[in-house]
Length: 130
Image (cartoon, rainbow, N blue to C red; front, side, top):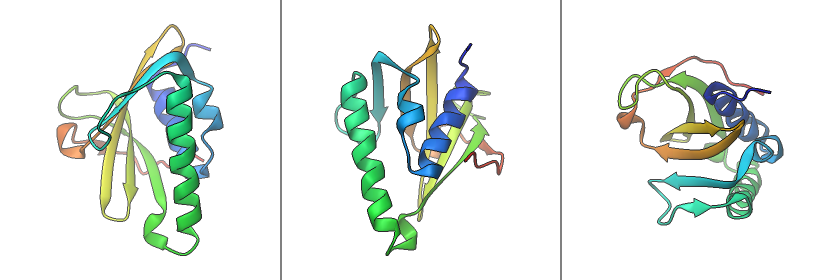
């Protein structure tokens, strides 16, 4: 499979919309990196990212049962600022919003970054992959 940034965004959206990260994690390179404006240190390597994402999804799943504001919804979009015209995932949880962009190298996701939407001004699609 010739993985694209759009494929990566769809896989990430599915992981969150299903609250199951396994298919997304299978697309990560062993030395993948994850950076977020809300996480102090960049995560390096599949093991670190897998542990972080699995725990985060587990926490959301546990809280979403009793708190509807904990529910995460992720749709596909295209960036209109910053690095324009890149596929992205647009996440919303309660009033919190995040844009996630992906870098693909040699058929694997080598990096993904979570940023405030104002940096990329995503054009949202209303497509929520499940």
